Image (cartoon, rainbow, N blue to C red; front, top):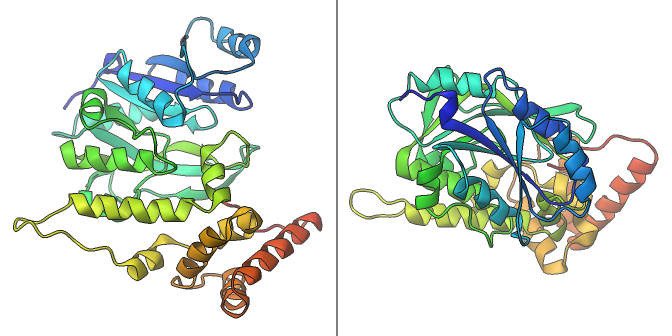
Amino acid sequence: MHLTPDDISIGITVYRRLDYLEQALRSAVMQTIPVRVLLYDDGCLDVDGIQRIVATFGGAVEYHRNPQTLGLFGNMNQCIDKSPTPWVSVLHDDDVLELDFVERVLAVSTEVDQCCLFCGGTTYIDSTGKPFFIKKPSVSERWGHLSAESFAVENQFSFPGQLMHAATARRVGGFPEKSLYTGDWELWFKLTLEGGTVQLGTNLSYYRSHLGANRGTTAASKSGRKTPCCAAQVKRNLARLSDEDGNRPSFDREKWALNYGPLYRDLLAYAWEMPGWLLSYNRRLLLMTKPTSRTSHVLHWVSRILGNQGIRLAALARAFAALLGIVMPLPF
C-alpha cells in the first residue's frame, strides 16, 4: 500500500462551539505534509464568528454548511460521504492533531499490505490544553495490526488521529446516527472486521476533556448512560464474532467490568444528575471492579453500606472539595 497526500483529506466537524475551533483547524492546515482540509458546519449560530475564523486561514479551509442540522454522528458521516479523497480523517472542533500526523501515516503506509483504518496513541488535555493523561498505543512496535477480537471488548484508541478508507466506511454504514455514545467504536470495529486496522506505536493526536454544554461525551456521562452504552456495544460486537463452527463468544459482565476501568470519575462528578435506576446500574458495575486508589476504595465501601445515597454523598463531598481548591480526578 502506498498513500500520497492527494489520497488524504481532513474533515472537521463543528456545531455551536467555537472556543477551540481555530486550534483544531490550525493543527489540520499546518501539517508537515499538507492535505485538503474541509470544515462541516452543522448549524453554528455565530455565522460571522465562524467566517472570521475560517478567513484567517486564507482559503486553506474549505467551508461547508449543512442545510439542516444532522446531529453529531450525522455530521461526522458528512465528512465520509463528501470526502473528496479516498482516505479521510475526521476531527472534532475541540481536538487537535499532531502536526506530523499525515507524515507519520504516509511513512507507515508503505510498509502495510492492506488495511482500511489507521490510528495511534492520544494525549488527553484539559480545557486549557494542559496534558493530564496519555492513552498509549496497544502496539509496542513502529506499527502493528489490531484484531477484531481486541476491538470487540474495548475501543482501542481515542477518537482523534484516525484515518479511514472512505468507501469502506460508507459500505459498512458509517457512524450509526442514533448512537448515544459508542457510534465511533462501532464503526472502528466494523472497519477492522472488513479490512483490518493498523495502529502506529506513537502519539498522533490530543483529545480535549472538558465539561462544555455542547460536548456529547459529557451529556452521556451526566445521564449515566455512558457505561451502559459501552456494555451494550461489547455485546453487539461479540455477536458479530463467530468461529469456524459458528459459535459466538458470550458476554461476561464481571470480567468486562474488571477490565473496563474505574467508574468513580464519572460517578463522583455526575451522581446528582443521574436517574436512580441508572445510578443503580453504574453502582453495581462499580462494585464488580477492583479499587485502584484511595478514592475508589472509599467509594466502594460507602456504596456498599449506603447504596445510591452513598454515591450521592460522595459526589457532594467531591463538589465541596473542589470549592476548597482540592484537586480531584478528572472525568474522561
